[in-house]
Length: 407
View: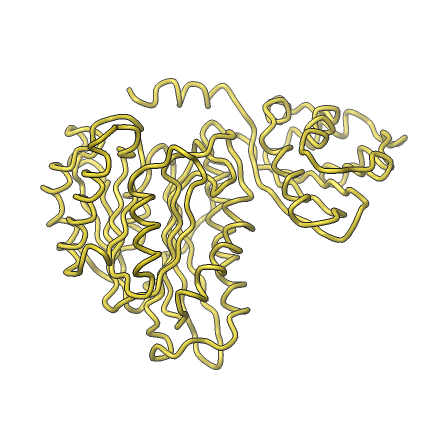
């Protein structure tokens, strides 16, 4: 059951892009015609592109192919093809062949070259990839291409997600308005190092590939790399950003700060939707770390708390077990001064100066932890750097969902 899923307005079309979907029965032939599981995003012009990928060392072939394509052709991408239901990972020699065939199918449908096509797969790891079922459904995706297809694509990339995830933003620069729209999927196997998800973002803002790549990495570090559901990083994590450049007739923006701010906000919105829909999650917890000597240290502290099974089960049990939080902070591998540490849950001050606050009452802490949405504030007292991480609890439902994932 998702925690306060947002009521989303329809995603905005992005000038220069068309989106189509198909039902191929990727996970099982019995699902053909029952749910969309193939997405096609086509740029009408050569698009500039950037990507961020999983740090898992056992990553899927589609990730390797995508990274290589961006390295060689980031200034002229035309297509993203993505399927749900089968990750095409961990399947031996045929994995790369199937990934290349998927790219070829996308290129044919988009009317572009294979080197201009990016692919992504998500779903069960270790199962033979049903490339023939995808081939049979490609015409459906191509025939459905339209500017308003983003919402259908958001549904088509889902696996265990309980709701489709998308976001749009507009940013005014130099008297002109530019659109950013993104879709994402993710519910389980979610952890930093790219987080575990697929996300595709498109914009008409005129940006070069050399501007896009560092900007996207910074945005990912403040969004998708700041969420955790279960501590596992997938083999297939992929985030792509494409720019059609139609917003100002292909003249690159001289000042990208406003655009990066809007992009980061959109990525945070998508990342938070993923945590709210985490497998078995019943609580949405924001962890704000301040007073760090550096942003990286603040993020490490937040991640350590977010991923700790003992902390997450305390969340699930509405147990304000501040000792478990201190344990997680101490395990982060970051230098701390215990006498400067402050811990607060929403408006309830638990620790100050490294000691349990004399006015703290366990009943007050328990009341906060019983909420289905709350914030932990951790101040290290060492500097001015800060970071925010989003996580959830760990419940029995998570075990049930993943024990039955392949059945």
